[in-house]
Each structure stands twice: as structure tokens, then as C-alpha cells.
Image (cartoon, rainbow, N blue to C red):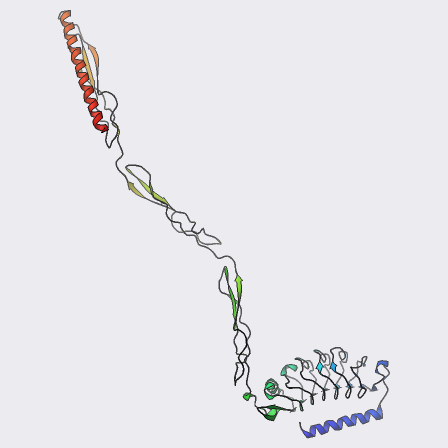
Length: 414
């Protein structure tokens, strides 16, 4: 800390105390009876207060609360003081500042929290203070101060962090932040690292170990386009990459979980062909076989099977049996030229003949009928003898033909 700066601050405090004693005016608000009010300034210093007084006039521009026993700054006590320009908490017991405690103090220009017991400051604590020109955090117990307590770009001209046990390498982001503040005149304080005490604005942050931090997760993707799969996302240890002996990121670079999409289309497939069957039991026919589109059945918009469900070809078996059928009758002449005689009729089993174990024709191949012609000139007796003789011959011929037919039938059956 610069000696000139400390001397200037001491003179200002002593001057304010002197002026307070000379020009103090009693506050009319009953709840502020212990404070002194002068114009738009409210002085509640050295009153042994344990908390910020209530009912401070909303048009107050300067609020002095130094040398009390206030232990914390809550997020409601100052919310109505939108005109406040100067706020002094020097020499209290403050160990915590609630989030949003200063969020409504858009006109605040000077904030002093010297000589307290702060060990940490929450992110965004001073982010809303667009008019803040001077911030004094000296004589606390801070080991680090993060740039996250400020906006990216501020109106700060003076930032005092002296007499805190700051560790240099934990201050890297604030040191980088300070270099981008175009209005910052005095960035005062020192830190310790590598067994050396160094001014904050002179410390080389490139010497510090940088622990790795994970990048943002990548967009999740499912391993399939339909059905059940694995949803996965990735992150990389490059925000920043560990360096100078810094630690690698903890945890896994891959995160996965189950994912379930709509049912997948299933294309149909043919079953096996059925056994082939010929359309006939003998001779020539058609050999056919079948298959079905059910191995599997198409579903969820899948394609049906290509091709035909029926396959045919020619088939040829042994010749079929052919049963014999009689041909037409042929009629012979009458056995006599006069008188009564015999006329024979014959037929053949050839329309068609029996083949391939087909059945032979049933019935007789020869029949005889009586034929009568004119009266013969011979005597009746002679004529009767001749007729009897002819009938005898006809009966013999018929027996001969029957035996011949029986032999043929036996031959075909065998």
C-alpha cells in the first residue's frame, strides 16, 4: 500500500469527524435519534451499532457507519437509498455481504469496507454499481478476489486491496481484468506467491499453475436414428487447458444415457419355399411351390418382399394306365344261303387298347345271331340236319372264342 494514499485517507477521516462535531444536526426521525444529520448526509459513526439503522431518508447521499459493530450487510437495509453516493463501513465486524446488498445503489460513487473481517466476496456483489469510482477493501482477511464481483468494464478509478493475505496465483483473473479497465488509475495491493511478496499490478500471472476446466457439453446425440440407443455428449478439458503444473479436470469427458426413438422400419423377408408338388400323379403336369412374406412381416413402414410368392415348373411322372375300350362291331355273312343260319358279329379291344396296367375290355368280342334266308330246295329233313350241324359248329366256335378271351384277360392282369 502506498504511504501517501494512507495518509490522505487518514486526513479525510479526521476532517470529517471534526466537521461532524462542529456542524452536527440532530436527526428528526425517531429511529435515527442516535445519528447526526446534516443536509443529505447521515452520520451514524461510533454509535456501537450492531446493524444498519432503518428509516434512513431515501434522499440521503452520504451514509457514514464507521467504527460500529455491524457484522453483515443484508440485501434489504440499503435497497431504498437510490441517491446514495458515499457509503462508509470502515472499522466494523463485517464478515459477509449478502447477494444483492448494493444492487439498487446506482448512484454510489465511493464505498469503503476497510478494517473488517471479510474472507470472501460473492460473485456480482459490485456488478450493478455503474457509477462506482472508488472501492476500499483494505485490512480484511481476503486471500483472493475474483473479477466476477465486477462487471466486465467499470467506471472504477481507485481499487484498494492492501493489507489482505492475498495469494497471487488466485488473483490471475482480477489482474487480467484490471488491465482492461480504461479508467482505473490506482490498483493498489500486494500478494504473496513463490515465497515472494509482489505488487498486484506487477505480478506475472504466466508463472501460475492453471487448473484445467471443462468446456461446455456438446449437443447430445443418440447412437441410432430409430429404436433404442445410447444418448451421449462430450466435454473437453480446455477451458482453460491445464498448464504450469495445474490440475487436470475432475470427472469424465463423456456422459451417456439411454435414448428411445420411434420404432425402426422392418423390411419383409421371404420364408423358406414349401415342398414342391406336381399337379398330377402320372404323366405330365405343373410342379409348384409357395413362400410367404413373414420372416419377418414388414412393419413400421418397412418394404414388402420383392418377387413372387409362387414358383412353377414342368413335371413328368410315369405314363398313366390306359383302360382298353371296344372298337366298333363288324358283322359277318350268314352261314347259309337259304333257310336258317348263323350270323357272327365281332369287335376288338383296341379303341384304345389297354396299356400301362390299364384294364382290358369287359365283355365278349364275338356274338352270334340267327339269320333266316329263303327256303332251301332240299327236303326238310336234310335241311334240319344241316341246321343242327351248323348250330353245333357255332357253339364250338363260341367256346373257342371265350377261352381265347379268358387267356388274354389273365395275361393283362398279370
